[in-house]
Amino acid sequence: MTDIVATNETILVVGGGISGMTAAIEAAECGKDVILVEKAPSLGGRVSQLYKYFPKLCFPTCGLEINQRRMKANKNLHILTLSEVTNIAGDSGNFTATVKTAPRYVNENCTACGACGDAVTAEVDNPFNYNLDKIKAAYLPHNMAHPQRYVIDPSIIGTDEAEKAKTACKYDAIDLDMQETTMDLNVGAIVWATGWKPYDAAKIQPYGYDRFDNVITSVEFERMMDAFGPTGGKLLRPSDGKEAKNIAFIQCAGSRDRNHLTHCSRICCMASLKQTTYLTEQYGDDEEAKASIYYIDIRAIDRFEDFYQKVQDDPKVSFIKSKVANITLDEESGNPVLHGVDTEGYHRYSNPHDLVVLAIGMTPNVDISEIASGVSTDSSGFIQVNVDNGGIFAAGCASNALDVNRSVQSATAATLHSIQVVNKVSAAEA
Image (cartoon, rainbow, N blue to C red; front, side, top):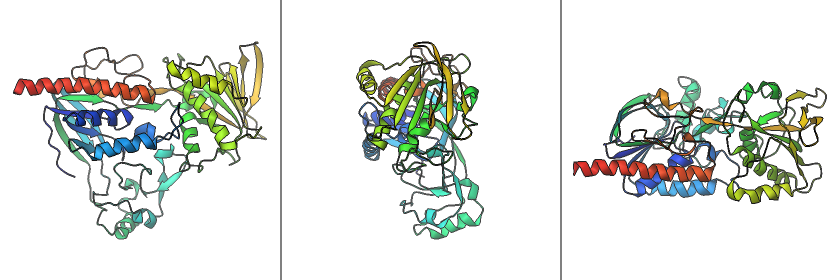
């Protein structure tokens, strides 16, 4: 790895999802020296795991490819993957950030030819598919991975499997002696873009996510639709592999609930509305294919009202105004059965479905209070953007539950603030 030189005119971007990529690119294209730190083996974050965006229903590979080309063309940008910021000391214009980097066991000679992956037989859970399937222990994180470089899972280091990978490589790219490293970076401003993680659905006990195979989360459903996902792009029930045609979507799964997340996660309604369109894509005019959305109220903000109306007009989609009380299992069919009260008419229901999708809530991916002191957060742990956090600026879902569009806007704002800080440093030293 090329030695990285950082100064108090350098901007550190923490997190390589859509917000972090945006912030890093825009700062670098303004001529600033930027270091982008990402804990995963490649950039892209949650966006890279989506099947489609809304409201245009286009694939995320388009936006990722454009950003990757911009990154490759900019010499001001330095990328550290498999890296985490473990501590931040100092203040605006003069931070010291401690960065820990885990070994990839694959160096920059890698051409992503795949020979190492072909050579090994050991498998590990596939984090890109939310551990719904397995992947070889020598793997490319996903097709659009940047950097386009393989990873050796640490579980096989010291075994014959690792030696197989090394022997198979024609480019001397496998380095099994790589060790964890730690470095201190002096930077002037920090953009905190560590993103979000799905709320733990197993904590919502009445819904049985940890007990019933055919209750899954919205992010898992997204991966199922992808041709490179765990089911090869088919909507198949985890319990028996049969096609799922009668699908229930439960809104506010963990959100707006004093027992779980008190905040509205904002994206969930639109995510479920988008996912109902996947049924038509999968099954066409098949009359058996139908979606039922169980909701408290639908929050289709701004221009997305038109998209909401389009879904309402779809005869295959039903809206049930109800907070589902609990889910039981029909042992014979394997169907989850939803129980509750439809508040439009106030009648009780017990509705069986092939598959239940929980529109799971968003929580901050990292607790910044464990890394940097003096940063103001709200009751949910999101960094407040309307207060002075001393040269640390939140971007994207580190600041709030945001969709992709607002995350990008947020990243641009954070970038401008960080540029102002390093510009002041530069002026003071001139």
